Length: 546
Ligand SMILES: Nc1ncnc2c1ncn2[C@@H]1O[C@H](COP(=O)(O)OP(=O)(O)OP(=O)(O)O)[C@@H](O)[C@H]1O
Image 1 (cartoon, rainbow, N blue to C red):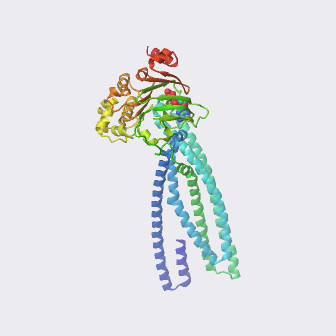
Image 2: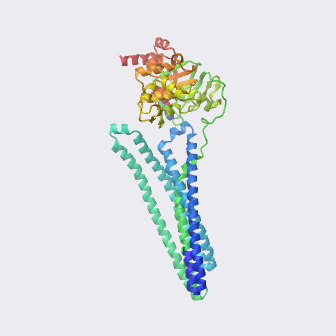
Image 3: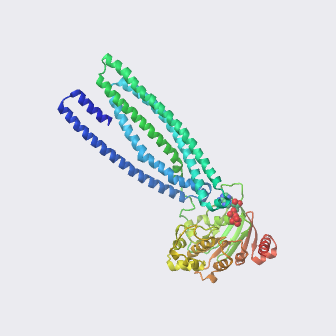
């Protein structure tokens, strides 16, 4: 607008001729319209580009996260990752939609103004350029500071998110233990850290404003002093000096805008550093579909001298030289004290982690050489605390099933898991929308068992899958340990981690673990006769129920 006004003023003051005035008035209107249209188109294009970019970024980041190693999720928190997907991606969008757009516009305007200033008077233009260079240096430092501050802000925001996420998901525990104030305190601590950073950012912004104003006014002072002297010496006219001051203002404001937007840009760069780092992570071998697919999985499993420690706790040797063979169609119960490494053994079999040494053979082939996607499709797994997705019961049971199945198959699986009765009593039966909070622990376990059965797996792994069931349900569900009892389509190898004696007794063989070692192996009665750890555990359980 300054430029348009300048044309208008110049023509009006200097020529005075009506024709020139009319022509320039037309140009002014035309330029006004063109500038409005261009500005609209520019804003629209950048906003579309912004939307597309944020969508792609979120997709790319989410897919990159989904394909990471399980150990990656051991070290990252849910709150942090959701914060990266949410506010960090948004921050980057701001750069594209606003800052980058303004930076480009102002660089263009500033360059135009500078060229014109040099045409008007190169000594004056040079002095203005020197001041602009000072301003650019200040911008550079200020931008760097903002980048660091933004990275910290994102860190603290993610930590604050983590606290709220944890508190809301554990609300029942918080209420029962009355720790609302304590949780509020934890949240306030992160808010305080955020406020400290904002406070420092405000001071830095004040200093930046001070530098800008001082340098801006010095261009005017220089223009008046040097320009005035030049007029008196007859080097330039008063009209040229007026134009010069107007364009000078234009240049300096363009520099200010670039600086301001650049600092926002740097903030976004700081905020998005981790986003880009996460996006660049390569997919884990654990999810790549490469390697051998066997014609049929018999379910012969061998652990050969397997040792393991979690990468987050290198000194804790969780499994030590484990040797064990599980034969096709065998039902093996793994028992042992809490923390002895039972679930870890299963995690290695599922290839969620790689053994530190030794190897696992499946039907004689190293697990590492098998197509892991195919292998997992042959496995039914029910974890310790199965969680449900926010979808209807039927979809929850079908979840991840690659077989061709219909609703009858779903109901059959639910019947075998003794879940059909309670599902039928739900308001919309199999179509009832459920989530993790709406069902009891035992009901969730039965749905998870139905999900595992529906896959008709060659290997079934139950990790304390019946711990939340009452005695009668457990007795019924235990039928799945015996394919012949349950009427399932095929026989399968079953690994069951259990504490309850009744479940253990149904197994062909019991493996007893202690501190990462297999200490006993045999049938229930053989192990009772041995009078070792198993006999002790069994006796204690019997005493507890006496
Ligand atoms: N993701 C992990 N990162 C680090 N250490 C872990 C991880 N998961 C388990 N551990 C540790 O490994 C050890 C064995 O755990 P694991 O879950 O295999 O025991 P468990 O015998 O299945 O116990 P429980 O019967 O209580 O389920 C424990 O000391 C546990 O703290």
